[in-house]
Length: 289
Ligand code: A3P
Image 1 (spheres, rainbow, N blue to C red):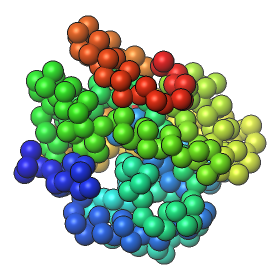
Image 2 (image 1 turned 60 degrees about the vertical axis):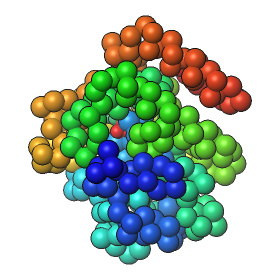
Image 3 (image 1 turned 135 degrees about the horizontal axis):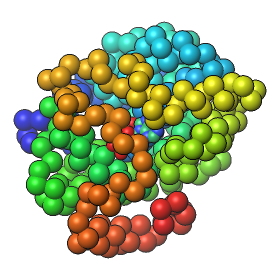
Image 4 (image 1 turned 180 degrees about the vertical axis):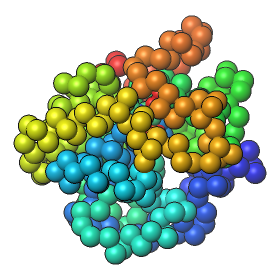
């Protein structure tokens, strides 16, 4: 673990993706007020949102998602690639991603007040997706045995800390501060109709009016089965020694409730007990409650 991870502000991060230089770049990053920042705990629907935001901001232009990988078009600000992308020179509106907590954001974030889209997902499904992801990328610890990994997940001894701290951190930011809270269960899954609602809601939040035809086009592109075919979003261009999709595909299932196939009854009960305790002061109503 010590070989793979570094500790930053009490949070474990994969050394392959974050360096002291990239973290310094993050701390000094100058936000603009017209930036759009996608924030997620890993495995909560980041890739989906990285598809939808460029499409919405471009009015549905497919070139917005066909010419760059998701990690270059909506780059993670804390990652090693960020400093080499000349983000300062990008025209507005710029789009970024982060997995960090609200209180870890750089000073300019609090003065520029960019727009934030925070995507959250049932933590038991996040765990399930996280488990399979750890099994296929070389820069993360082996998640076996599952019972041990579950304890690490619930204790925050995994990359980006606990799901609980993450969600509480970003839920504490209220809607008046230009943040849209959206959940995977409400908005992403399955029905084309739901996706249209999601696209409409995001377009409204980003103040980018779209006609019905553009909404339809964007929703269609962002369906699981269509994104899975798109090589700029499906991670198929990542070398096998970094991400081995023969073990588990990045676009694995894209469903709600797969935790039922992953957790034992005892594990699910333990998870629920920890959830109840950690979330007892949270007033938000989640779709999975
Ligand atoms: P599963 O492993 O449960 O299938 P992230 O992008 O934050 O890393 O999250 C990845 C998860 O989101 C994976 O979940 C992936 O299949 C799912 N996902 C990605 N795009 C999706 C889409 N358009 N619709 C539904 N699920 C999607």
